[in-house]
Amino acid sequence: MNKAVRKTVIAGNWKMNKTRPEAKALIEELKPLTAKADCDVVICVPYTNLETALALTEGSNIKVGAENCHWAESGAFTGEISALMLKEMGVQYVIIGHSERRQYFGETDVTVNKRVRAALDAGLTVILCVGELLEQREQGITEEICAMQTKIALAGVTEEELSRIIIAYEPVWAIGTGKTATSEQADEVNGYIRSVVAKLYNNNAAQKLTIQYGGSMNAKNADELLAKEHVDGGLIGGASLKAPDFAAIVAAASK
Ligand code: 13P
Image (cartoon, rainbow, N blue to C red):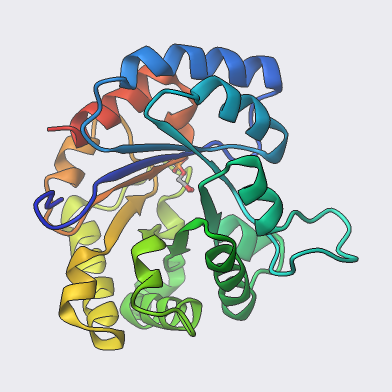
């Protein structure tokens, strides 16, 4: 991270976990542990927990995000939630393009771009996920994949709007597997993504962009990952479900 130049953001992605009472207990435990954070702290929770999370984090430094949103403002899209609906509730962040959505729910680079546009139009901050599969890394096309995902997702996004974009580099092979990318691998790809953004916009805009790492980030490896120049935070899955673990990552990002 380089706090002189850009924001450090630690975001939890709860995925499909926690009933409302469980969410309440986790947030209550988390609040005092992260109260002195010197970084931005976000929890992205299932839709059913948004209202609970918003109420319980009021007046605290924890911000609330959703895990996806649809691209239309409203309409016949059974089961979907619009960016406008999230914004109206007071939600500030939304994860878009997570690899689990790409893998299990037919999300493509084009639908990711549509969702990014809708989220920005509604006034939300986007956590945009990109990352390669294991076979793509083995084929030596990690950079091509990340560049393509980044470029398509950011189509039609202005330089001014880029201040409401966070990119999360999440190598798919590192998600939920316990296999973390080495800090060198994370720094290398994050730095590469920054160079792609510099070419799309300019160097100044790219330097200011927060680029997180995600994939088995935990209390033990956070220090080393966050020490890298281009790792501006983390998108945390499993470890965000345990308050002491998530708080330890927030503490590492607060140094
Ligand atoms: P894990 O931290 O459980 O590997 O999940 C990472 C992730 O997918 C965050 O979005």
